[in-house]
Length: 124
Image (spheres, rainbow, N blue to C red):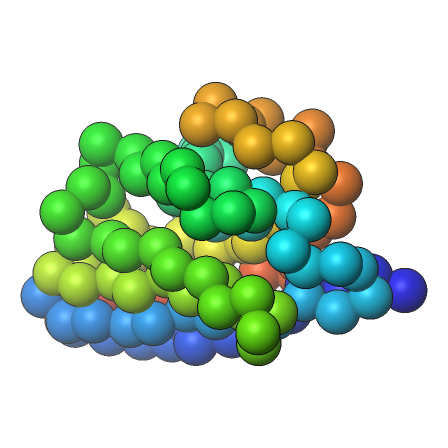
């Protein structure tokens, strides 16, 4: 059974930082591109950042560029999303997803596997 498990979310003040983790099991991790998505209340799910299986390509949305950094550790079957300078508008449920084919334009629905999400709340 394939599982993607996100962790690291929580409540943080504006300007603070969090690091999200996505741990995968049940698949050949290095064969998959991994993406981070988020969905805020009342809004559509959006792509935040994604990385190809070989780590040769990384996409980051303009809304988080310069603040969020994605990295992956194939030895640990884990992808991280480091989030700095957090803003209230970053508040959302963050999901990771896996897909055999990398594309910077990645509709969430075209993922092969999904996690359950982790809540990030940025508030004073």
